[in-house]
Length: 254
Image 1 (spheres, helix red, strand yellow):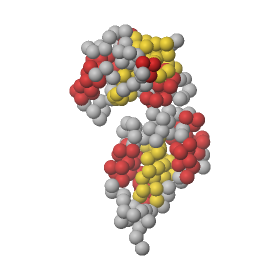
Image 2: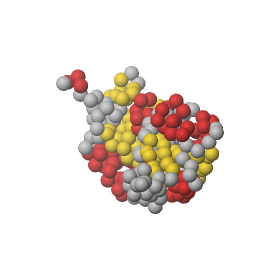
Image 3: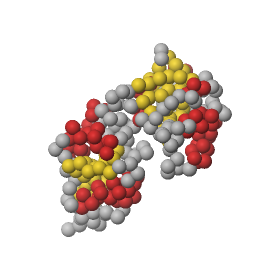
Image 4: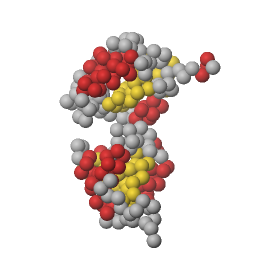
């Protein structure tokens, strides 16, 4: 009798890689919530586990701190090898600066464990809804964190996306060690974007203390933000309408 997986191995158990959305339980997808209810153990970064613990109090929780991503992934697979169904949780969407890629890479060493990726609401779309409609046309997502990507490559991406007149959504815009990175990014974008380009910032998306602001690129440059802020830089058509950031798609001209 062949293995039920159809890929030459017996499937011992399953890991769900779950994007839990911005933070509030209400912004988690039904599929994500169902996956967490179906599992025995929830694994994640300490901060993200605390966002879901109260809603899944009967589950076993295992955590690792920041920068222990590979260790966290292997922990999930080791738990699954015990016959448990496991959820690896990420904020936002697991496939957008999340854990799904690393889980699938490490999963190659655990062919007996099935991995299913469950999408979630990422900061780009969650923040866009708070601001209005900044991402209606072509846009680029760029992280300003140079922990895993050299700054020279980030710089090139910022310049090319600006030259091509993309709306640009910036993740990880600042931290204690990178306090001036947003300023540096704005100086690069200002080579191709006008100072009056409409921009927006949203902090604590979907969490307590959520706040947003619409402002021109010239003022964004000197704005203080943190790791819990997502930044939106408009294209040449983006406008402010009643305090909201709107990028036209062009439907009215069709």
